[in-house]
Length: 115
Image (cartoon, rainbow, N blue to C red; front, side, top):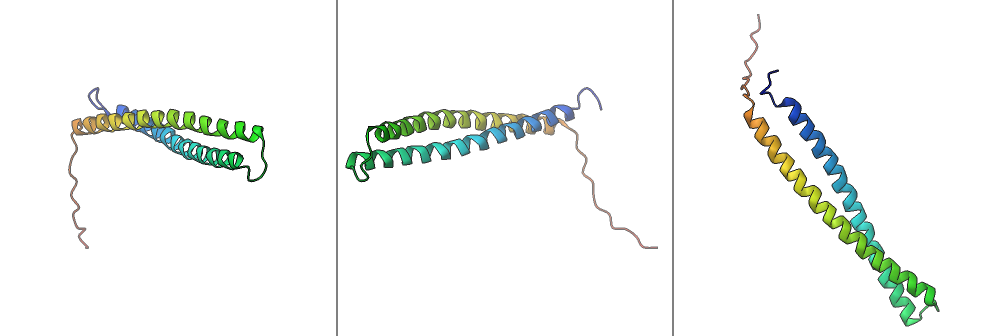
């Protein structure tokens, strides 16, 4: 390996891409959970307002908390997901650039001769 060989740097970038992909996946899970919280909070608030099950003020406050907490969680994780995806794209572009600097040889498949 020479100093110009970017193999180690490519390995580091690939590890970073994997870590960012895990962060993005975790954000997607939190986004789903926040959407569920918003939906269930809105449904509970509607049920409380209509007085279907005779739920009180505590249920109304809880439903409002679910909706607001879900909105905050959704916004935060969408922002983090976008940042992670941007970082992944930048890292992949850098990796492609480093790979293009490597002098790769084409290895041809030659048929084996039977003796």
